[in-house]
Image (cartoon, rainbow, N blue to C red; front, side, top):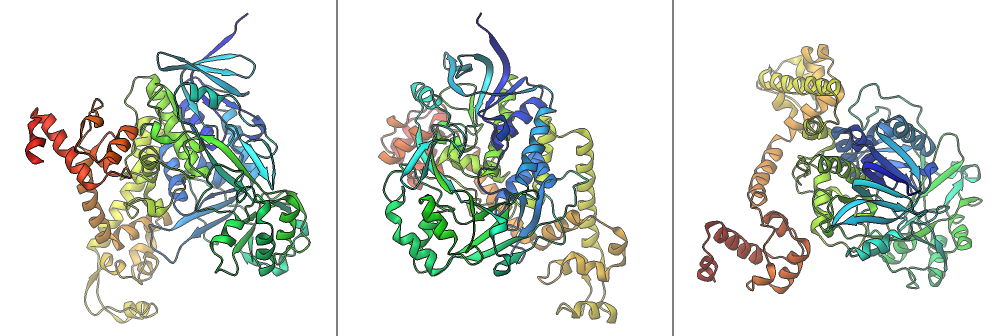
Length: 633
């Protein structure tokens, strides 16, 4: 008997992208199937058990603002919370949580299992069912067929994964887990370009064999911040991380064994992440640096397994032990799991649209490391967008496209589908030209209305959001209107911060001074003392006031950029016929198929002269006057 299962949405892969996609799709009413190679490893953290950090915390806040789960899970399972870059401006401040790995997995697994419209199955998808360039479902390793209107591929590092430890290698997506075999061949047969990338992870060691007296303690924050905008977030006992450094002995061991590195021997084809290099890469590329920071971080409160951050390597296991024991405090360390590199297949994301649906096969979406990214946060953000759009595609609704000016998520996706990547993509604050507007503190202001419109933000949360916005608006207006006069008491308080006033000032003007913040305003303003505004509200008020001039300037830049965003490029344009374009521009434009002139301008190899030519052509087509270009040239 030929049994077929039927769904609206099938999500292939149970990592962070897959979990967000599956939760979003099922919440929106779609009958959803999540497949995983190993159900015990759903939502696992194969590398560092941590969420957030520079730029990544913006993504987590945006996921939460849209109705995703990563922020909620991180808040529920943290071992330590720390706000990074506090001495710098708000555009680069970043919240980071060291997570309890097992608790995080358990928390997300329970969310999935208690979610209506969602089934989870352990199997390996080996083929895709396609008819007339439309996805129809998937086939597993046992030949079982699962029909679906849409399919989302979130395969992580499992797609033809191969692990390297020294000169030894074996098939695996992660240590202890089988690779996904067959799906790459299916994609190639459908006409997709499939390439390889590489990533890696450090060794895990037994904390009982570490001499912590030789390490520098790195405590969490006393004043807690959270990722989720949901209320009643738990206050948990924090566990410290620790800092050590590499030594000359460490570097000597590495340099003496480079011939045993699969990267340096040319055994690994794919490029690794530039911004998270292996320790051997650090030692070789930064030979002038005599030492590198290494962080010792717990994996959970009920385990001795400890993560050695900054010590990723693919050198042999015996060499790894020598390297680790050359670190202060780790002289007698015992290795629980060796470090390794993993090479895997991915699909260059220029083959996708901004909705994350493939251009070649209608209804087929891709999210996460299969698109060439690295990082849990990047994967989760893509998974959420793919899950939303898969359901909207089923319902024949317009697909959600996040712009660069709306979010880090929009910037991430635009970079992926516009720029050809040959190394794993990592989100950085420097990648966003609008980072002062796209701060982690205002993600809800930017995206919660969209999350509510989509249907992932419930009525209760929507009301709380509206109340928060009213408080922000009301307090901002009050600070602008309330004036404070110079007197002995006020200047005595301000003197403690090297400030004074000789004239009457509004409280807003005082906050705009570099040394003054809202906490100081509360010392001199009795109304603010009695107001008891939550910290997340008054901090946002403070940022908006203090950086108003810069924000206004960035909004002006955004308005100029929007002019090019509004100029659409017709689907039927044939770049090969535009002989006035450079050959490189013709090749890149034909490959990426940008949807707007702004996107075309961001493609590497397309120069301003090419954009000017395109602009004239589009205008002449609009006016139906093809001779306009001839006159121009």
